[in-house]
Image 1 (tube, rainbow, N blue to C red):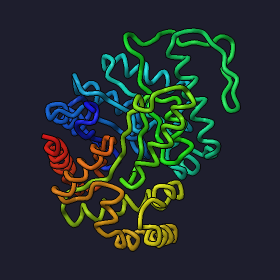
Image 2: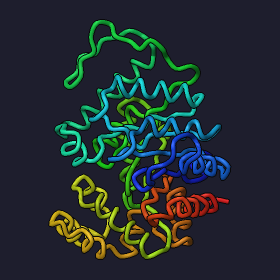
Image 3: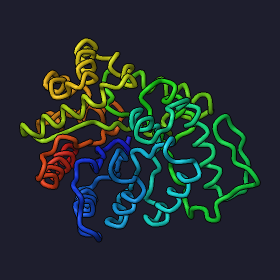
Image 4: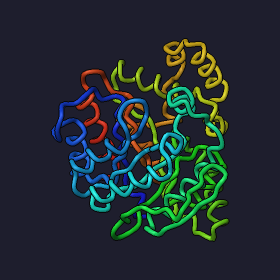
Length: 341
């Protein structure tokens, strides 16, 4: 299929130090390089550093043709109305090149960092998408849900020109994958092993059937950690992977692999605050199962495997060296571009 021709790239905002003011910085140089290399989409993710929509604005202003997406903006820390307003603004700034990627966000970030109870994520996701689509239609509407209530014929004062704004949902468990199949234009997986893709597709198809949709309408992507082949960067990559896999939300993906026992040991060490020790247990094959690895030939082979499986791999560059972030990101971007030439 033509839409599975090449990988995507994600800007690891958490790994990039503070930049000078204005439009000449790592982010604008990186997006221009990705655009010139033929990438179709570039993503930014929101963690505990830069806010998603401001960062996406910088990427949009630094480019002219590539599609910009949030990967992901949390529907816990942003209301549906604010997400719709952000999407409308980025659609306007980018000339229709924006994708709104939403998801729950990290459980600890939401509960501990934002002070918001991490409750009913699937219900919240459903209501959020329904409200956003109504708001972007430009029509007045009311909505009475379990979580949100929109009253008094509310509407946004503007609506997007041209085609609608695509909405992608982050999913790593069956219920959210089914919801994406039912309501979303795409699904963003994270650290999805190849072994889980068959079940991912089946769950997306279940949701699509509920809505009478063709599951092929739902673009499937996966964030996959990647790094450069340097001792410092490799350790950073492994430590970041352990951070994610220490969360029980990844149990379903891990259950498709041979790594259940090792992951349980890593998870235990992580929550005992023995995090460097946990990272040392993550051997190369473990890293390659849940990502793309750090060896150039392995990275490119893994990219092709995901594309062949019908999933767009998003290079998720956590394995970069302090003080050499731009050089390492350029190296990984170039290897990604070369993989499908």
